[in-house]
Amino acid sequence: MSDCLFCRIASGEIPSSRLYEDELCVAFHDIDPQAPEHFLVIPKEHIPSAGAITPENSAVVAHIFEVIARLTTGRGITSFRVVSNVGEQAGQSVQHLHFHVLSGRDMTWPPG
Ligand code: AMP
Ligand code: ZN
Image (cartoon, rainbow, N blue to C red):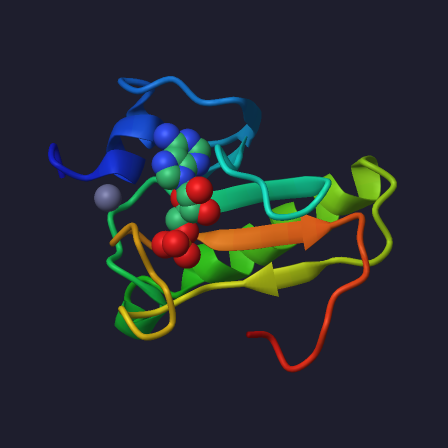
């Protein structure tokens, strides 16, 4: 989608601080980090949110979680939080599925 920020980041049209890329997904540092380590993992395919996962597109989610495990292990991260906000009330600001990976500080539960 040409008007979607994360589609444009995935295609490389908008630059990002990339950690990883393959044929299905891209990982890049969040521009406004909320923890010492804060990166996002997104599918290259435009999926509006975790509320739009279907049997047809769900395989990429499993792949993204494999990538998250590989990236955190590779960076020596043993404790982290994965977050995907869905909808306005939950704080979703970009309408393209993304998983926040946050680490490097104590975190509270329940999240705010
Ligand atoms: P959310 O608010 O859960 O939809 O998450 C969107 C995230 O994208 C926020 O944490 C933003 O800081 C981040 N973000 C927005 N624009 C960019 C960008 N150009 N590069 C990297 N991260 C971004
Ligand atoms: Zn998109």
